Image 1: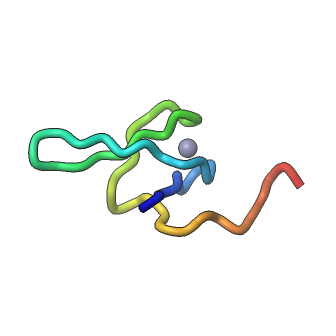
Image 2: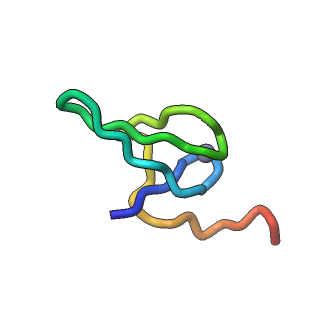
Image 3: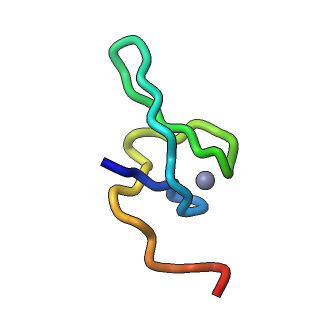
Length: 48
Ligand SMILES: [Zn+2]
């Protein structure tokens, strides 16, 4: 599945560690909590 950053809407990179899964946003350059990530692409587009 693909997950998205709740802050910028960018796709987050899945990082699997020791028994836990984390997500990293390359745009925000920080880790995103699995509880905070979005499971669907945001509909809002700031560029438009
Ligand atoms: Zn982000």
